[in-house]
Length: 117
Image (cartoon, rainbow, N blue to C red; front, side, top):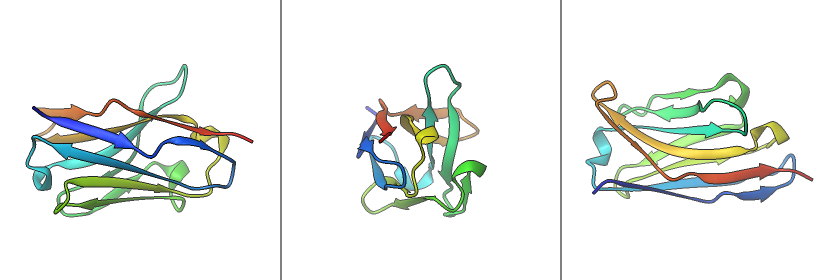
């Protein structure tokens, strides 16, 4: 059974930081591209950051320089370090694991991030 379990969300003031983590089980983690998506109320889900098997990374333009994605294949975890948070970063953040052009595609349950004073 595949499980992706996110943690680390919460309420933070503008300019603050949060670190999201996702623990994966039931998959061969090291062969999956891992990503963080987010969905704000009334908006479509969007890719925030991804990290490939090669460790190459990709970021949404609006988070470049503020967010950093990383993975630990020994611990089957992927993290998203978020800094200089803005109210527009408020959303539910989802962990995703994908391989084989999406043929294998798994999601976590999501964790709420709220940026507000």
